Amino acid sequence: MILFTNATLVEFDPPRIRYNEDVLVEGDTIIKVGKGLDAAGVERTVDGSGKLLFPGIVCSHTHFYSGLSRGIMANIGDTPDFVSILKNLWWRLDRALDSGSLRASGLICSLDAIRAGTTAVIDHHASPNFISGSLDVLKKAFEETGLRGTTCYEVTDRHGEEAMQEGVDENIAFARSIDAEKKAGTWSGLTEAHIGGHAPCTLPDAALKLLADACEERGRGFHVHLAEDAWDVSHSHINYGKDLVFRLDNFGLVRDNSILVHGVHLNPDEVERINERGAFLVHNSRSNMNNGVGYNPNLPRLENWALGTDGIGSDMFAEMQSAYFKHKDEKGPLWPGDFLAALAAGNRILEKSFGRPFGRIEPGYTADLVVADYASPTPLEPENIAGHMVFGMASNIVETVMINGRIVMEKRSFPGIPREDIYRDAAEQARRLWERMDRITP
Image (cartoon, rainbow, N blue to C red; front, side, top):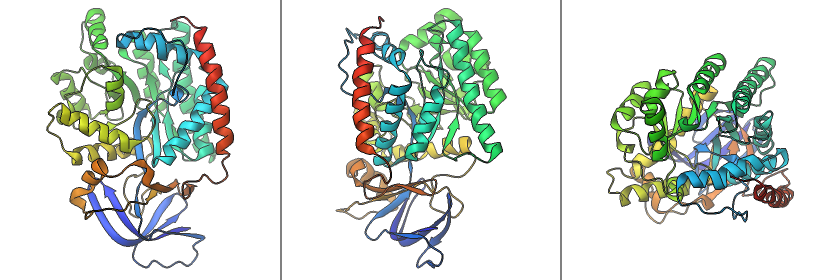
């Protein structure tokens, strides 16, 4: 058992603060919360005096395959619009990935996430020349670092029907392997699966049928990009005569365990259908700005929305702040509390995937916890937690991180993990990856 003592407990949705409380963790679960808890049987104690203790943060959409793109020096060429960004950069990078570069990317992205207090990520993967077995590489990276993660392969028709089918098969095989681990009692409890699709503009009806069948067979949710750029919308109208959401819904892919990403160019009827189905829309403010795809005006009308990064790291402090400031720059009506609720909503996505409670510090909840050193210059109250998150806090306050009942980062160090070796290998893998990219034509 592990005991956190004398901490200021902070919860995000609904906002709550409790001072000088203890939290007792046994296995992967919080079992007691209160003042002066009995330390009998406790194996180690973490002193939370003067520190905040809050539930782990969730990044509700990311791409760990992009981890070696930082500062990229490949010959990208002109990128005047979103489609050219995809063709010249991302679709060349994903084709250049191999097992070694993906492993390095998964490890450094995992460590960076933990360092920022992000205890769970919902990943969306692509590596067209390394499909079969790619999700297991990411799974091993999650488990080696102790990060909680779900992942899937983003199926596409860009590389032909055979590769499209291989992507579907990889999703099914990965979900099946996790189910087999659960049955055998060897599951780590850290990893789960979705069924992934790239975007509707690269998914013909045959692919949507295969993906719907895979979701049904494995009992998993669908994870897909949607209306990120206006081209996706136009493509659907030109080729199928349908709005994007209604096209997906015709295949049963808009459900309460579906993760629809971006949605910048959805119309009000599509937003209403998403709400009716209980699906989640994940907003990625920094990525939208970086790609120049526009601003999502639908946030106030969405019943279920969360925050992701679309591969721009896993620092959710920075993402929440960017999302809020961009929203106000667009004269939006939402306030910091709305964005804090969206950040916390990632826990509801986790609950659907892992089948257990997340996001609160109460007995029975999953022991994903963050100790943070935040010296507040003004009173910290439930009503202004969101204001502190937007205007004062940053990921550098994160000090110690527990995931699934295990301390994976302690006082900003990673016990038992050769961090320097991992980063050294990542730099070498990145150079090789960029060289391979230069040999790939768009």
